[in-house]
Length: 112
Length: 113
Image 1: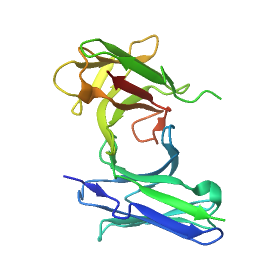
Image 2: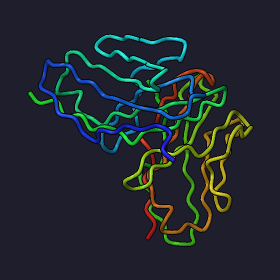
Image 3: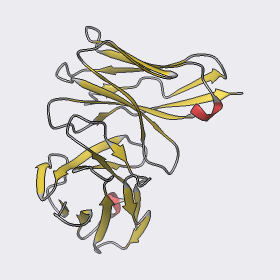
């Protein structure tokens, strides 16, 4: 039972354009969402997070949007750079426990 | 600039042996989480610990697996009598508090012969 879903296994974008990565969730109790980037043979690197009391959070080139009614969030990267090429994971959690429930990831390729 | 440190990076064991995976959290972090990534799968939560306490072990297999985070020293994930199905990447994360982002180490890749 996949509670966090990333339906696009891969995405290819031209350098300088916008990358949009999507994530859907099924558990309405989730109240905190995070995006991580992962390179091969390394651990996930935290990028940006959003609480369910907000619908947008921005940090430099990265913006996360949350649509609670649709149980959908997205990560926008503008402008995309070749160094952004990695696997991006969406994760969600609820309550004080904070164990992360993960999507399966989207592999982003930014072409020069 | 010490992030989360995991060792060893690679560990090879024969079936029936014990595997010990170590995790030193970031300085100032008292919350530790262990996750496992099986081949071709996503990360799955195993256990959440604070100093000397297991807060949530709902993701731990019922047998052979144990975890600790002692008052002094690193957190240890211990797997007894390993089997082929234990082959995976094991990631440790730490956070300053339960409502803070988790920061990950580079993992231990466990291979069972």
